[in-house]
Image (tube, rainbow, N blue to C red; front, side, top):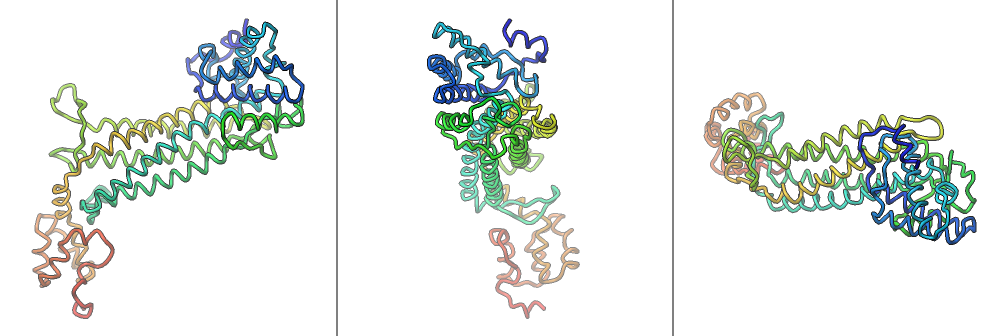
Amino acid sequence: MSYEEEAEKYYLKTGFKFPFTLIKAISLIKASAAMANKELKLLDSEIADAIVKVSLMLANGEFNDEIKVDVFQTGSGTGINMNINDIISRHASKLINKKVHPNDHVNMSQSSNDVIPTAIRIASYLEAKNVLLSITKLSERLNELSEKYKDFVKPGRTHLRDALPVTLGQEFYAYYEEFLEDKQDLEYAMSQILDIPLGGTAVGTGINSHERFKELAIRNLREFLNIDLKSPKSLMRPMKLLSDLILLSSIYKKIAIDLWKISNDIRLMFSGPNTAIGEIDMEISLAGSSIMPGKINPVTVEAIMQASSEILGLDSANSYISLLGEFELNMGNPSIIYNISLQSLLLNESLIKLADTVLTSIKPLKERMKSLAYSSPSLITIFSPLIGYEKAKSLYERIKNGEKLENVAKDLGLDEKTINIITDLNLLVNPGIPILKGKSIESNK
C-alpha cells in the first residue's frame, strides 16, 4: 500500500486539494536537491537525472491526478511531501528500470520540515506576483479616471449625510493613492518571504545533509524560478515561525478592505435609479432579477465584496494557524498555504474585475451630480468665514428646505461678483475661502 493510500485512514477526507503552485514548488525543490546531491557525489548520476526529469514533468502539470492527500493532514506537511516523493520515485524507477527510493533518493538531504516551509513561501511568492500585476493595473485605471472626471462635481457625503462638494475625479484619485500604497506594501511583504529554510532538515540544524547542500540546492532553485531566494542565518526561524506569511496575509486583508470600500461606494452611487443616489449608471447587460423585468443590479461589485469578506475571514484563520506548533516547527503549514492561495485567487480576480469590468462600465450622470451638489445644505459652510458659525447654522434650514444658495447670499447683502464666486461649484472643490475672494478682509469685519 502506498503512503497516500495509507494516509487516507489518518488524514481528513474533505476533498480540499493543494494549489498547483505548491506542487510546482515542491517538485522544483526535489529537482534542485537531486542536482546538488549528484554534484556532491552523494547520489548516483542515473538516479539523480531520473529524479530531475520526473520532478520537472510534475512541475509542468504531469501526474497531477496522483496527488491524493488532503490539505487537512499532519501539520508539518509530511503527507504532501511523501506523496510527491512517491510519485517521483515510482516514475523515475520506471524510467531507468532501477529502484529509486522515495526517502533514500528523492528525499536525500531533506526533511518535510524544511521542504514544506520552503515550498509554501515559493508558492505564496508566485501567486503574489499575479496579485501585484493586477493591483498595478487597477491603480493605473483609477489614475486615468481621476483625470477624466476631475471636473465632474458631486456632493460630498459624511455619515451618509450631505456635505460639501467634491469631484468624482478627487474620489477616484484617493483610491488610486490607496491602492498604490497597497502595491508598495505588497512588494515589501513579498520581499520578506524570500528567506527559505531549505537545508535545515529536521530541526533547522542541517543534520544528515552535506555542508554544501544548502548552497547548491538553493542556487539550483534560484535558476529554476528566477527568484532571489535567500538562506537566512537561522534556518530554524522560517521553520518554526510563519510571521512573514502572516504579514503577506495581512496585506491581502488590507487590500480586501480597500476593495470592499470602493465597491460599496460605487454600489451606493449606482443605487436607484429614481429612489436613491443615482449619480452613475453602469453598462450591465446581466438581468438582475428573476421577477422584476429590466432591473439591473451591481452584480460584480457585490461579488467583489463577498470575496473581500472571505479574504478577511481567511486572514483571521491564518492568525490562529500561525500559533500552532511549539519549539522548532509550526504545525499549520498545509492549511496556511491553502488559505493564502485562496486569498490570492480571490484578490487577483477581484482586482481584475474591478479594473476591467466595473470601472470601464461606469457612466457618470454629470448633471444629476451637479444638481445634488447644489442642493446640499452644507453649502451654508461657505458663509461661516463671513458671518460666523452660529449665524451660518441658522441659515441651514433654508437650503435644506430647497432655497437656492444665491437667494440666501442676496439676503446677506453680498454683491453679485461674490455671489457668482460662491455659487461656482468648481471653485468650491478646491482649497481657499471662496466668499472672501474679491472682497477685502477689512470690509467683512
